[in-house]
Length: 345
Image (cartoon, rainbow, N blue to C red):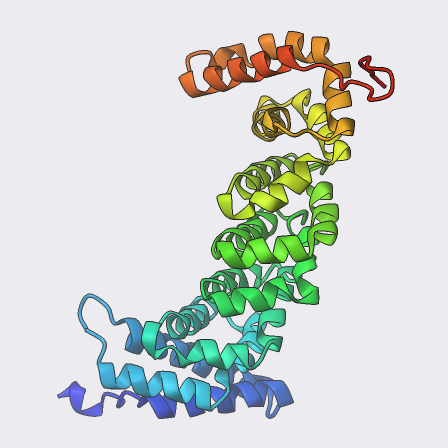
């Protein structure tokens, strides 16, 4: 007969209001330490119940009416900003549950009013990005942020914000976990919505590549390697053709890549190679770029002939290297229009 005394499950509205009240009590520090501790326990229990209501488990399927009601109540009660603001005060499991609840709302497809909610409150995106300043919540916020930027409208808001450039610091964080998570978020932002990113890069070319140039020359090996690989993906994407042409027409960029070709790490060399080959393959090289290649032609050919010989079994790599060598061999200094002779500088 013990089931008679079992506590009744809270309704979606009760869960939402109870959570909001307990967070408010923590914020205003209402009550003794013992009472505040109970509020934290209540928040944890409520968030666990919310997650169960939304996702269900092996024994219980979620009910559509509860899902709809809870999603509406969470937004109506402005619970998302409160959860984010105080997530650092939650225990480990409660942080995960809060993250799961928010992400559920963000991925609701056609019913997704959470995206509209966040788009009308850009401070939420700022809070999420700046969460990388706090290692206790950085990974939770990173997962929520990546759910946000799956939606083009929210991704655009992050890209065109002042806080977007914070990523160039976060990806070099001393904590490997934080830096890796921040880089994953940056990569998602720069690759998920190709038309949006192409427009952003063309409009903000100078500022973006000034900051990005610091990453590919970072003293942090992981940052350098990841940044080089991502740069190759960005430049070789068809949507970014105009950006690629502008990048490979700049002699300073070529100089950086030539230095990285000789990096002590073979992985760095390999990623640099895939960008360097685009400079060489460009059929309309500007004079400053052509001058550098012609001036270093013999050294480059000698270097590339022995470049990563251990990859000779990779047909694609070998073919690319042979094409690069043949193209370099054909390079000649531009002819001086006034004297009719070739010139080098």
